Amino acid sequence: MTLNIVVGITGGIAAYKAVGVVRALVLAGHDVHVLPTEGALRFVGKPTLEAISRNPVHTELYEGVAEVRHVAIGQAADLIVIAPATANTIAKMAVGLADDLLGNSLLASEAPVVIAPAMHTEMWRHPATQANIATLEARGVTVVGPAVGQLTGTDSGPGRMEEPEVIVAAALAVAASRSAAQPGDLAGRRVVVTAGGTREPLDPVRFLGNRSSGKQGVAIAEAARARGAEVVLIAANLEVADPNGCEMRPVSSAIELQAAVTEAARGADAVIMAAAVADYRPANVSEQKIKKDASNDGLTIELVRNPDILAGLGHAPHDGTLLVGFAAETEPDDERLLELGRAKRRAKGADVLVVNRVGWTEGFASDDNSVVILGSDDEIVTRLHGTKLSVAGAILDVVASKFAHTTDDRTTKAADPA
Ligand code: C5P
Image (cartoon, rainbow, N blue to C red; front, side):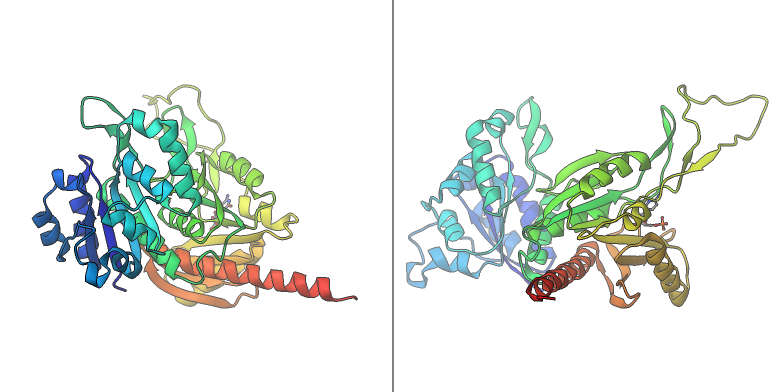
């Protein structure tokens, strides 16, 4: 779907990188309208922005009055991205100032807003900026970054604008999840998501791991957040950027993940176990780096079983907490794959199970995924091939519909005198 996207560019040196944001959005097939502030045009020229966006660029509030441009742009937008967002613009947004075309367009719009702050570390950490950011987040604005790294001068720290591809991915994720199902249908829900792959230590420098990047779990966390949930993300060695607005609980091994998820699951509305958890761990962790043994060509490592965390939750009383498990299988036959999924759902006591095929080239690290979602009667609820974000949306649709049913059940029971 082509989106009408407004990209606000404000006056910071990172404005030159905003060209990359505009270009990526145009190449993704969207209709992009750039609104630079006066300050932004000191860093990047209007002809560049017109050429890259393939649309005229307007800056003047008092131009185009007949077409009521100061409200028309905001009203037509499906998504507003501000990159870079300076401390000044963030402050103006927090109080709702409309002294330029960008400010007017923001106030005239109901579209989701994503901002990528860029400024010096001191300015970012200043209580005024932090208070403004908190105000914007409370209003539903998605804040991407800032990244930590080298700033314009010789100094470094938090304040660098996030890379264009990270901003674009986050922005499109917000737009996709707002357009999916009902926006805010997970508001008031606490959702715990596990993502990534565990590492089981052998010695201080080595571990047994797996190829899970964490992309699918992070997409679920990001989408749940965008639909209004309070999200706790238990993150096992992620190879992707942290999602915005989620409470992060970093873990490494299966035992650490178990402790974190058991604690977070208390009182949660849903636990979505997307992490690839090792089934076994080394029986002994060497305090010293294991040395090559000159007298022996081989090395035998004894492994012991890890607890099955999902089954532990599934077989304990978990009234009111919906459990979603994953089954990543290499089984080539579709029917057999589903059988494995159904058996796994029952064995683990999960309410919903997401089955996907993995292999040397399938499943891991890629942006796409093919899944079958099984419900609590072993029925196929959804079959889907798409981006990990659209898969996240489908899983959350199932979660949201289960919530709706349990709420209906509770209402009916409460209303039933018997
Ligand atoms: O048994 P298998 O590893 O295929 O099960 C996958 C599902 O179970 C995933 O949801 C995963 O997060 C969870 N799991 C677990 N504890 C383990 C192994 C897997 O919770 N030790």
